[in-house]
Structure formats: structure tokens, C-alpha cells
Length: 198
Image (cartoon, rainbow, N blue to C red; front, side, top):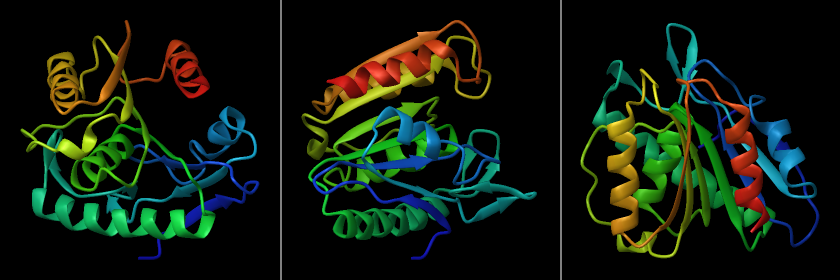
């Protein structure tokens, strides 16, 4: 699968950093942010190939918070193949994924389906409105979830439920809240930087 993507070639032996934009974003939304967070890393940022009234997304939905699950499954498999190809090209020993909103959701879906592909997950305002099946392969995976306490798109109880699911699989989960909504707060940016320092 050939997504339109922005790529920055890193130094030999450096991690691969994947970024996934939110609805209406594109491959530039977090690319520079990743370069700043981890200088020297290989950075790849695909553009979602689904158009929702002209806004790029990674999978279809039928309404706010209502996903086309068949489409999500197909596009999760396609994205997993894309990530596998990027890893082979970069020859990276560590792979980091950062996604916001719809981008966090496709990244989470890939991790729950093929947990060996991404080592460290940064999920900003994810919404997983279904009950995921157990995935023992998430054992030991490092996950940062950032969220707004009053996010109208990703309600706090759903975020708590997803974090609880990940913890039950043995993932090392860090949950960061800010008092706002669906916007990205500076404290989230700081939390991401701190997460990557480990």
C-alpha cells in the first residue's frame, strides 16, 4: 500500500518515528514535531486515504464516534503492512508511533491487531468505542495516553476504559489529563517529551 507520506531519513541505528494526523490534518501535522522530539530519528508520516467531505482520515465512520468496523479492519491491515515496510527500510531497532484523534485510533487498532510492530505508543485523544479482544502481545508495551477531561469527542469514561483494557493486557500505561477538551494542550506536549526521554 502506497500512502502519500512525508519522510525524513535518520541516522543509522536511530529509531523509526511514525506520526498519524487527526481528521482534516495531513502528513505535515506532526512531522516536524517528531523531528524536534527525537533529532536524528527516521520520521514517516502517512496521509489518511479516506476523504470525509474533503477531510483526510484513516478509516470511514458513519457518524461521530460511530465507526465502519469492516472498513477499519481492512485499513488496519493495510496500515500494518505499510508500517512493516517502513521498518524494513529504516532498519530501526525501535519504533515509536504518535497519533492524534483519528490518527491515534488507527495506531491503536494496529497495535491491538499486530502488537509487535510498534514498541512505544503515544495516543493523543483516542476513542475506541468497542470492546477490544484480549491481546497478550501488548505485554510490556509502553503507552502514553493524553486526553482532555471535558473532551466532547473522546469522553473521559471511554478513555479510562481503554486505559484499563491496556493495563489488563500488561501494557505499561501512562495517562495524562488536561482540563480542556479535544485541543492539544502544552502539558500534553510536555508529557510526550517526558515519555520519550525514558
